[in-house]
Image 1 (tube, one colour):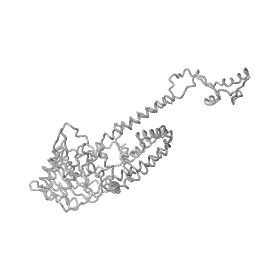
Image 2 (cartoon, one colour):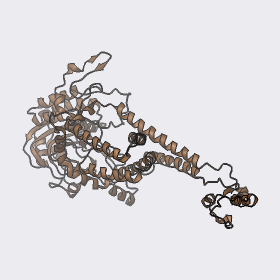
Image 3 (cartoon, helix red, strand yellow):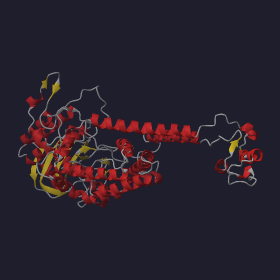
Image 4 (cartoon, helix red, strand yellow):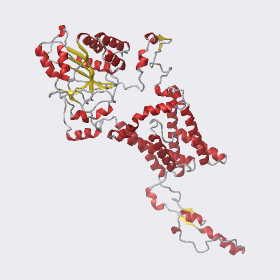
Length: 589
C-alpha cells in the first residue's frame, strides 16, 4: 500500500513496515509501458459498481487480445471475489493475538496493492479471496484505524495483479472513472475510487507483481497523477511514462543491497519546480560536480520549503505559520492520546525530567543554589506548558543545555566579582532575550536557518556532550576528595578500631592557676566532663577536645558506591539501547 511511499507487510504477516522509497526493477517499467500500449484502456468511464467496470473492461478488449466468452466469465468471477486485506492493528491487538494464538501461521500469496491518491496509498491482500465482493463497505473497513492516516479528499487507485492458470496470454486493463465511486469492500478502507489497473496472465516468476508495483509507484508520483487525470488518449499516458523515465535514476547492481529500504527524505522537490527542470542544466561541470534546477540542488546550493521563504511583511512568517498550523491544532492533542504514542510520551517525559534533575543539580553547584533542581523543574514545566499550548517547534530543547550551564556559571562569577544581584541580573537578561526573540520573529530571521549545515548541529551536540562528560567526571572526582575510599580497612582488625574524645586540655587552666596564682578566665565547662563515650564528634570538638584513635578519620564508602552507580547506570542504559535491536520479543513488544 502507498501514501506517498510504499509499505510492505513484514515477514511474519502481522504488521505493516515503515514507509520507504520504492525500489523498482527497470525492466518492470518497460513491461508496464508495453502493457499499457497493447492492453485495454478506458478513460472517463461511467460506472457505479465494480461488476459494471469489469464487464466493460472485458467487452472492450483489442481484437488481437480478445478472450473467449468462457474465459471472460471465469475471469470476471475471479476478479469479483473478495480480497483479504492485511488490517492495520494497534499494539494492544497485536499483544492480544500474540498471547491467544502464538503458533498461528499464514501463507502469503500474490498481492493486490492499491495506492490512494493524492497522496497515494492503498491496500494489499495477503491471501486468496473466497467470498463475493460486497457492494457496501464492510465493518472492518469502517473501523480500520488506517483511515485516520489518509488525508481528507483522497481517492483510491487499485492495482490487481496475479497469475491465472487458465489464461494463455496476459489480460491488461487501465481504467479511469469519470468520478470517484465507492467500490464496496474492494479497498482496505472505504474511499472513493478513481483508477484501476488489472494485470492477469499465465504463471511467470514474479513478473506481474513487479509490474503492479511499478504502476502503483507511477500513480504515487504527483506529475504522473496530473497526466493520468488529464489524459484523453493512450498517447498521453505514454508521454507521462516517458517523462517519468527521463527523471529516473538507476542504481547499478552489485553496488547496493536491493533488500535495504531507503527512508523517505526530509524534503521533497515540488512538482512545479520539477516541471521546469532543463536536462541541459544537469550536465557535469568542473570536477564532476552537477548542478540541477529546482529542488535538486547540491549541498552548496541549499533549497528550502515554503516555510523558510520570506514574505516581506512584518510578522508575515508568523501569520503564515498560524494559517498552516490551524487545521491541525486540535489533532495535535487528540493524536497524543493514541496508545501508539505512549512510548514516545514516556520517552520525552523521562528525557525532560532527567535533564531537569541533572542540570538543576549542576546549576545549584554553579550558582550557590540560587538556581537548583526545584527552579529547573518549575521553569521546564511552565515553559513546556506554554510552548506546547501554542504548538511550538517540537524539535526545540525545552530544558537547560550544556551551553546554558556554562553561561550561567560565567554570569554568576561575573555578578559576584562586580557586586551585582545575580537573580535580578538574570531577570533582565531573560527580558532582553524575549525582546530580541520578538524582533527576530517580526523580521522573519528564521529564513537564515537554510544556511545552517550539519556541521553547526554536530558542533553544538559535541559541545553539550563534552560538558556533560566533563561535569560528571569532575563531580565523581570531587567525591573522592571529600570522602576518600578506605583502602586500609581490614575486617580482621575491627577490634582495634576505636575513636575516643580527649578532654584533658580542659584542666590545663586549673593547673596554671595553682602554680602561678594568676588564674585566666575559665571555660564554661568547669565541672567534671561527661563520659567521652557519650559525646558526639561535633560535641567533642565544640568543647575543645580532640579525637584519638585509629578509626577517627573513617568515612563510609560513599565514593565507591557512587562509582558503582555511575558505571552501572551507564552500562544498563547501553544494554537497553542494544536490547531494542536484539532477538528478544517481536518489534511490537
